[in-house]
Image 1 (spheres, rainbow, N blue to C red):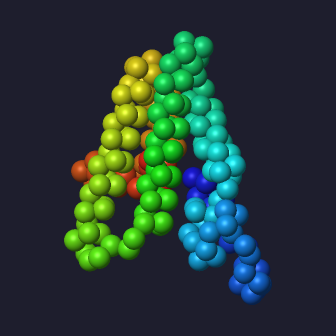
Image 2: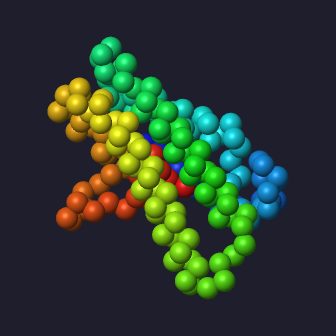
Length: 161
């Protein structure tokens, strides 16, 4: 929500041409933005998201005791997602559409494992959350109502690349 507003807002002067800036990490200038963010940028974004989720939940002291396991999984998922993104960008281009589909299935399996790890870590905390607290979680994670309960995993920030 807030991230979408910040991430996609474009200033009016964005179309003015300027010399190409050197990327933050020394990669090619045509690299996707997520690859030119510094490790510090990425850590700050992750820290802010985790802090915001914790704030949105307004945990009681008993609930807060269960939080470290949830945070650890979120951080582990972020590390793995970044590694997948780096490998995808730095690796060889797929030879054909079958290799593209194979790569997609591997990435989806890894995202699925990350979601499962989150569910397992969040489960004990969820049992202690109020209905009001539980209602706040899905939209904050980037989940929206889809028919038949389906949700694209790429839209959920705890496993995004």
